[in-house]
Length: 296
Image (cartoon, rainbow, N blue to C red; front, top):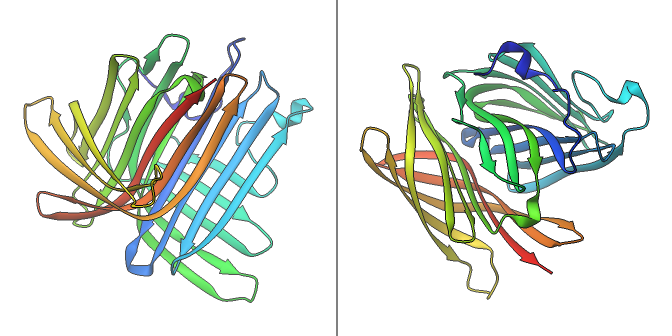
């Protein structure tokens, strides 16, 4: 069971590709602002990866930075690359995320609105994914300020997750991960389907102020853009929760950015989308993430 201490960096295991990650997203459709920010900390490789995408009025801004860890001062409790920072203000409740680039300043408070959900047993695929993992839905309030002095308010919902352990991206054959914040504000959804060989691994939950209900079955049908690419245009997720209730979640891609991850064993492509969702007549916004690998 996770504790307050688990919000911070963990003592790494001496294993290749051991990684600790923070992930936050922002969904503010009424102000036409969407963002994803993440940090991947790999002490055994002595490096960290920082990545953010920000969409405002259909325009994309990015921050991608690979940092070499050289001194003990680089291994800190609240990681930063000097531009982007992730700071715990109250464990399992409140974070502060900041990003300063040459073009803009992004700053927001991320406040948990539903209980943290810990994936039972974590992600456990021997030699590929051996990680502890938990997720949470939140409220986001902040701003974006541009170099010319103009400012935009952020007032929306968001999602976060935190994981630590071994992650070998290229050995993952297929991966579907979603986080959805529904506009009525009463609930949110996260689901994850991973395919390796003939095996499928499923996690997820539907979250409300009262409780988290685990998802036990996921089927995905993906429709691709008509350009002979693997770029997802839309998808249908059929879900069954632990109480036997069935759901049909439909995702429509609004924005898409492709993120390659390579190693000596091959390359994988992460298709990171900001998507519009429909489920049971309700509208939501969030992230649908698709992954495909090509092994050497």
